[in-house]
Length: 79
Image 1 (tube, rainbow, N blue to C red):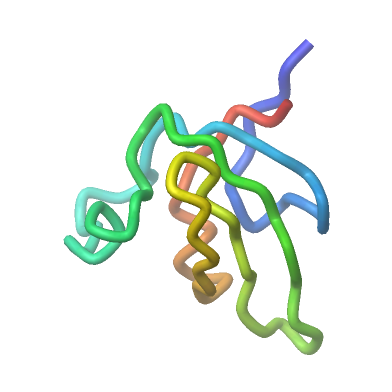
Image 2 (cartoon, helix red, strand yellow; image 1 turned 30 degrees about the horizontal axis):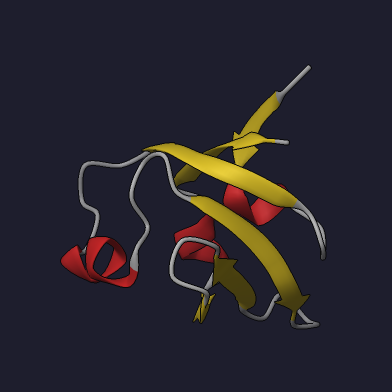
């Protein structure tokens, strides 16, 4: 069974597929970086003290760090 959540809820090493965004004000940079519905991501590192989350965009093997506030608006289907 799969679990739907926001990206900020994942733990290190967990993978998920982006399904949608919880806001209509998504910066274009997200799409340019590969955050597109259907894309699989893996959490590589979570900074302490509510710091950024480092993600691996599996499709292009890119490591990208985003703020937790940005991760909260990315809806995922957790594997």
